[in-house]
Image (cartoon, rainbow, N blue to C red; front, side):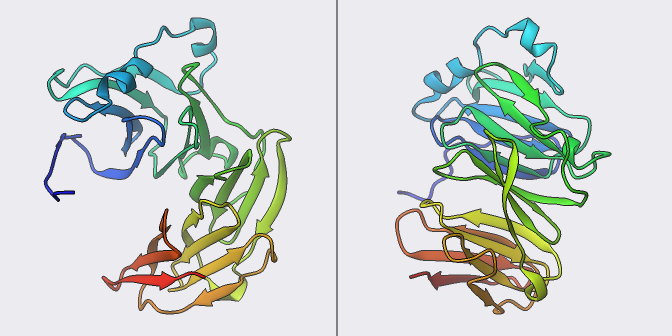
Length: 253
């Protein structure tokens, strides 16, 4: 409403990704090997969000976790109402929240196997695990939850795979094909039927999941790699940004 900065926190290392929880004033910050869950003390809803981070950990569950959970004490209560560090074995490059705010998916592309490169965190149980025992080989680029179905979209350099989380199986594979050299980012529309794929081959590739696993449109507007794509939550628009230092907004009807 005002454009003024409301809160600032130093994280000490280069930040790879940030994402707000869709249900609480909880911010996930990926920095090096750590995903830090922070609750800004100065913003409305901080007390409720901090309560999510102070529940008793089930030690029998935590012992099975593939990631170390620890409470961060380096911030004052005047700055941060709550902070928990999720310490991974490899650098984290991407984070994505489930719509209900209890699950957080993160990517570790430098992990020795593709399946170990995807970690799912559950806040209510303080548990972290590799959700799939085996995944196709390939460098992991991006991850996103489907907004309405129990599905996960996982992007490698050449494909976006849609997995059923309940059945633990592959549902669909999206292939940009000749429209892309290497996938860099993805975004899912709030309705769940449309997916945007940004590529290092200067393309924004639009998929309509109800129509086909092949691209609905492939747009070559940027003069550099596309680094991020996003749908508007309330208007028929989407946007892309690339290495050409340009932001493009598209009418998406």
